[in-house]
Amino acid sequence: MQSELLDRSYHFLKFLPTVADFLVQKHKESGLKVDEKGLYNLVTEADLKAESMILDEIQKNYPTDGILSEERGKIEGKSGYTWVVDPLDGTTNYTHGLPLYGISVGVVETETMTPLIGMVFFPELNTYYHAIKGQGAFREKTPIQVSKTPSLKDSLFVTGFPYDRNLSLDTLMQYYKSILQKSRGIRRTGAATLDLCWLAEGKFEGYYELGLKPWDMAAAGLVVLEAKGKITSMDGNDFSIMNPSLLATNGLVHEYLLAEFEGQINRVAY
Image (cartoon, rainbow, N blue to C red; front, side, top):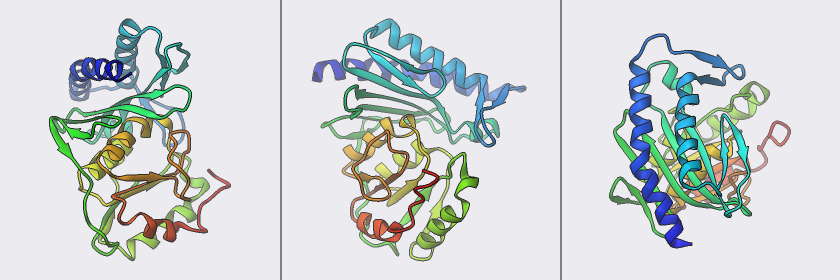
């Protein structure tokens, strides 16, 4: 299995810069076509083309693998591996001319949906992160680890808001207020993959969000775990990319955050 994972990782670490170059070039053009999938959920022609580039490369080189992608959905496979793809995480940022967006490509074990490979490229930040289960996490060729900050008061956190945020706005604000009062601050980048990768290299001590999808977590979540971070749901259950609730930390402040969230989880909306 290890050789199969290495082959897939090496191949796509070489291929994904092509997709990154496409997104950068498209970002420079005027008149980008944007459609609305929901009130706050956008999709652009760049998302769709980037996804086609990635899926075509998977199917050409690994035709028996399954695929789960944001725009095209699920394609069954027979190999026991499933690729989980978000061709453009941070579409709203992208449409507003911001450089905070990424390409997320992960491979999971089909039966358990356990992440095995994670690769996240940030085209306009000129960097990428990657991990293979059991082999550590890297920013480009440099090993990374989560921060060693042990207290909430010295910690910087990051969060995001779900597309259907109006269903649970009071709850979201309660989380925000609770953490803001006890920490150094909270940031919002607008890209879950960036939040997780920056956590993995020690820029943040913790990240939480509701309403996530598998492609938000599969690749960058593995990067966090391999950087010696800790991930659960916000109510303390084991990490699963199929659970829309996520709490990721450096491990040292994890229990403090779970205590802050206890009794506040909005089980109606999520």
